[in-house]
Image (tube, rainbow, N blue to C red; front, side, top):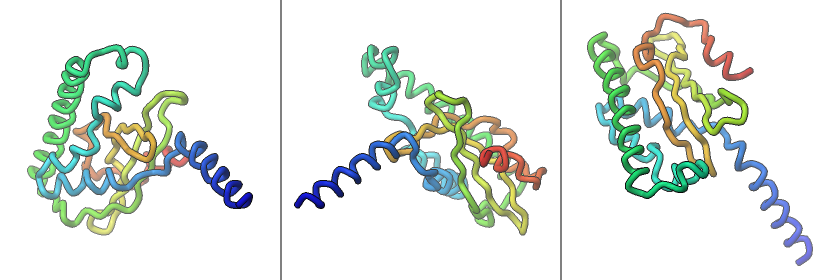
Length: 172
């Protein structure tokens, strides 16, 4: 019985220590790619921050009403959808075969130490070459990855640089 309690306590401590260091989640990267392949932004809905997420960010948001936070959430969702649509339109215009895009690796890294957001670089393969021009701003919290921003939407799937500079930087 004593060993059981000791093991349970050890597992509990490990879980607490690992909550701030959530392992990279490839689920968001895969869902992002699927959303573009299927032309359905709704596949990203489960990654868009909830009211509870915003309230967890600190005093400024915690003091706001659900209605106020809902407006902030709606504005952020509209911006995400607009950036996503820019990517989808350009991919279609450029004739990129999204079904041929394969995710090789998803990397999550700290952008600014101490800030509640991380960068995510998705390394993907297309027609025999690897690229890493798909970047997202995310927040990992208690095993969940939230999509906060799609930066540089005009540079996603541009496929000009095969040096994988973004993923090299993310690994440092």
